[in-house]
Length: 216
Image (cartoon, rainbow, N blue to C red; front, side, top):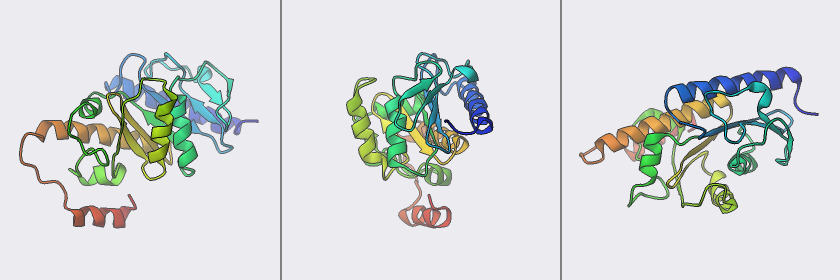
């Protein structure tokens, strides 16, 4: 038994709407990127493999049980393990978005990054929606070793950046995961725009104040 029909129908429609919005604004192209949500009973809805986020069919989304076994719908994305390892480490999160967004990927291929926190705290909303962003070493797409590397960071970080690949973000809801990954992409864009100039990121005290106020 999956989640209630009304819950599942609503979430299927939400995935389709978010996918189309992300695709239409050029945040991921072709058949790249994937989205999942976790239902109240622990089962997961996930975008299928080789599917464009701009052209999803709610009836063909992949349904997996809480152990990650495919139940129905099209074959799930080959990066399903990125989603399941985030859920395993983050019991309060119910949605994951993984993109190949241009500016985030561009940052992920730069040399000399702080692997524990890739981007500086340039804006308050980045701190509030993303916080710290560790860099996960490069693994080939579909390599299960990537799941272990992400899982090792996921308990303390709801957002990670895969080297030469793109961001993975989880949150309590699909809307919040979408907002966070979009804030990450905008901050990556800002970082690339100003990285060769003197910048004035938020101070440690300002970051601490934001975390105290908003629990980020």
